[in-house]
Amino acid sequence: MVNTARRGSAPHDRFFRNIVDGMRNAVIAIRRDGSMALMNDEAYRIFALTRRDDDIGRPFTEVLRDRPDAIRALAGAFELSHLPNRAELRLKDIDRVIGYTLSQVRDDRGEAIGAAMFFKDLTQVEQLEERERLRDRLASLGEMAAGIAHELKNPLAGIEVMAGLLRRQVPDSKDAQSLLADIISEAKLANAIVVEMLEFVRPIRLEVERTELSEVLHQAITLAETKASRGDISVELNMAPNLPAIDGDRHQLCQVFTNLLTNAFEALDGKGVIAITAAVAAIEDRAFAQPPTPTVVVDVADNGPGVPAELTDRIFNPFFTTKPQGSGLGLAIVSKIVDAHDGRIDVTSSPGTGTRFRITVPITSAAGWFK
Ligand SMILES: Nc1ncnc2c1ncn2[C@@H]1O[C@H](COP(=O)(O)OP(=O)(O)OP(=O)(O)O)[C@@H](O)[C@H]1O
Ligand SMILES: [Mg+2]
Image (cartoon, rainbow, N blue to C red; front, side, top):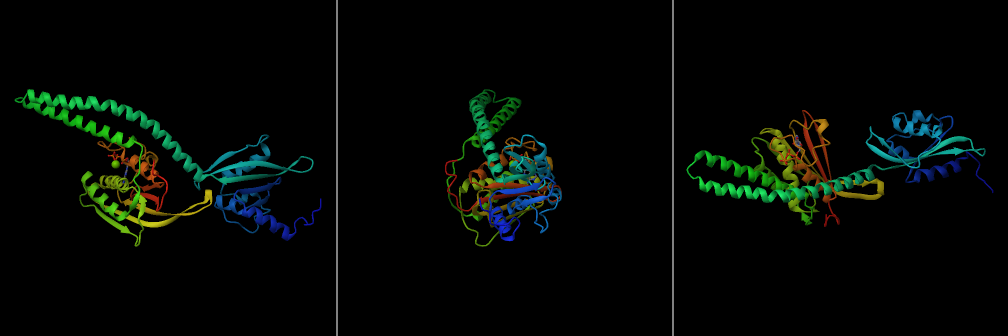
């Protein structure tokens, strides 16, 4: 075998550097003494670190100082007798998930002289899987709820009808009349919850058409006013000029913003400001190396009391509510509709400043017709 490139010669180094930096996977290699031997561009990107010229040769614990989870994983490469074939690591501080493999680099005598870590950014894959899991969970929950709701509908209708009959039999008793009126209105309320629940568990079928968001938002403001009292709350609508129409289901999108605005009205309790902004953005899909997807981002922000940090994970769960009269389905419906549009919803909230819901939906979509 003839190896003409001398070890350490510059063209040789550049050759390999170009290869590893062009790789879609991230790679880090360390020597037995703990010095960094190699770290490619993708590794810097995933760990959100900036390359320093002298990184190669520095202790890897220093180069990766801000990513202690990664240090721990790499350090294990010399200690573990059995290296993981594929493991996952959650980098909490930068909110990323990586999938990695570790291997030892051995010399001719079989001595471990270094270790290498190959990894990939799984954050978006994770998010997709999480969505899948949520869909599955909602589907089985939905089946059960649909069954119960169906069973409840008949007896509830029975109560309402029979209370109505009884009412006619005691026309002169005022007390009985008022009790029966209460029974009827409670039965109606229970029935409305059942109907809402059935509505929620039914699989979404989108009727996609070119939809002007400004129309949807105006309509949502009007509808929200019928569901919660607006009082002196001012609503500012800020649409970017030339906002394109999006492929979406007009009625369902209207429901999304109606629910968000209703919540904001309720949170503000008669006074405050709601700011709605809509703008175009491009979301990069790095995990799949696809071109950026043109999207529309709509923010609905209020300056109300905010959502306590320990509750932000739960507010999208069906039936989670902090309101005495709430059914807790508002945001669950919102996230189901947004999901069907291949979009996403994020919430940021802090006590004192208020709550902002951010809806991001693709402008054009081929998917979603049969969800
Ligand atoms: N803008 C907001 N500000 C503060 N808290 C909010 C806001 N939006 C939602 N929440 C919290 O999230 C919970 C869930 O909201 P969701 O719309 O799903 O149900 P709900 O409003 O309680 O009942 P429903 O919408 O079914 O009548 C609310 O009970 C409230 O605690
Ligand atoms: Mg609500």
